[in-house]
Image (cartoon, one colour):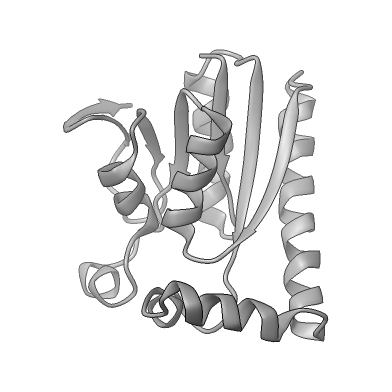
Length: 172
């Protein structure tokens, strides 16, 4: 693998990505660490916004304390993961911050960067909560043009899954 996109956030579920990456993925030539900022409320609220409404929300938040706090949090998250991966000897790590719907932004960045693999975490949400708020890892898996490795979180089953097309491979 030449280039891998790793989507991370501030939850403990994302930390499972580090273990998975260290144990299962050979060192790629480069890594793109992506954090997608949740602009407002829960993912269900922003998921219902169209492109025009989302653009208006982004404009309205520019220069606010709330947006500055989001940016600071994103930098902190990316710095943590970059440091952890750097401790493992990886040096070609690019960080990217995006705003919007997580699954859409993950897919956009994967296409723009021409990655060979996407790694995302699974939140371990209950079925009811997934129904209400959605599940970014499942949306990425369904719509990605390259393999997607889903790292387990609490409640996501006993092992991670590698999705390639419609086939799933369990990874213990």
